[in-house]
Image (tube, rainbow, N blue to C red):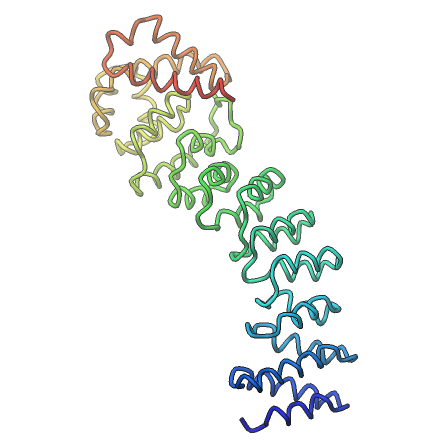
Length: 368
């Protein structure tokens, strides 16, 4: 060390601003080389400089030592309470300051610049993100959500989705988060743009019912759309193809779609599995049990034992949906009633399995 700690102390106690700034630079350059006695003196020098009347000195101290983990805690807190020019480096970068102390500072310091610097910290705990959220400033919230180091509690995530369901910037930022709770991922996928939906499907095991709602571009989607737009068919094709490629296009998902009247999903899945154009698959499926329809089903390699049950359910579904827009639970009840009235449960193989799906769904609907 070319300059002793005593030399640095002499510079720090001088009157010239240049000398004090040079003292700060020397302190930082040698900070991790001081022995215990020198470190004690260095802390006294830092405390002295942190109280300097010249803002430029305090700012220099804050800027240079903002990322130093061994920087004296009490000085870091004092600088974070200082004017904006001095406070922002410490608020944004210092690990010496605890989240609770930052919350206490922001309770009394209302400047947006101070709040934004905190929202940009490398690591932000859930208590601090909750506090920042309740500042109710869109710029702060977006900065925090885009920050990969911000820990968002499940409650805060729910509030974000409640308050900003149509803010694409926030929704996209949330889709990039890792290890979201499945209930949050399920809500988010219904709100996200198509490309983000496909990305999330690769990251999470999304429940089938949420997948169908996502394809309707709404978080609620309790109604069945009878007149399906071309755009929804294209979106469904992209998403289902993606599921197939990732090995996630399960038989349970396909029949789950059929049992809630999502014929766009069902028909598209059959077309993709059979490797035929969607228009051809739709025509053959509506053939109501003809030989070509059976050949199409065999090409999908789905269980042969379910063919008759699926044919009957598909026939009933088209009949019901041709009447207009109805609620999913209404469709399920009518489907179940017709199956039971015709006693298909007694003479059609695998029909009891479909009945159990319908009954389970209706039971869950009654609990809502």
